[in-house]
Every structure is written in C-alpha cells, then in structure tokens.
Length: 97
Image (cartoon, rainbow, N blue to C red; front, top):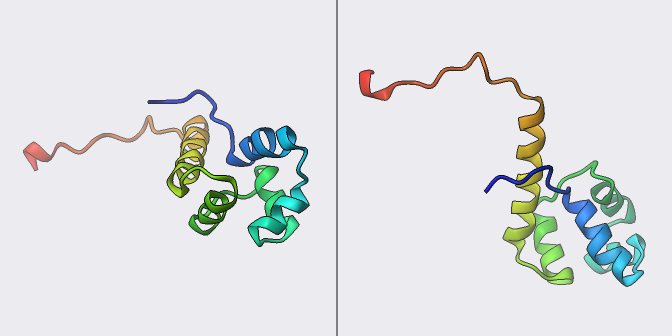
C-alpha cells in the first residue's frame, strides 16, 4: 500500500513518544545508549533508522525492529519518488531476450 507523505521515523518518535510522555530527547538517548546528538539527528530527520537503532528502539520503545525499518523505508521511498525522474527508463522485455 502506498502512503502519501509518510512521516520520518524521527517525527513519529517525537510526536508519539516524546511529546506524549514529556520525555526529553536527552533522556530517551540515555535509555537507548546513544548520544543525544545521534538521537537529535534522527528526530530532526537528518539521519535514518539503522538496523542497530531499530533494535534499540524496539527494546526501549516497543514495536518490532522490522516496523521501525519499514517506517524508514516507506519514508525514503516516498522521498525518492518525489525527486527521481524515471521517464527515460524502459523495462526490459525478457521474453524476447
């Protein structure tokens, strides 16, 4: 299913976990075992969710690691679709190859 402008996982973390619980980014970073600047880059959408971070988020916040990675993939793919021009590409026809 295609989403329209899916949120960056950092935006989701900020809205669902930080704002809702009044937890600070610094506190969450400490629980995740990462620097506050590392988490801040994710929250600001400057960095993506790596498999390692997905495991950390899953352990601390819940959800599966796969769901964190899917959220990142959905965001990345939507962003790429907005900027990449594929009009000059043609599919290969393997039946005639």
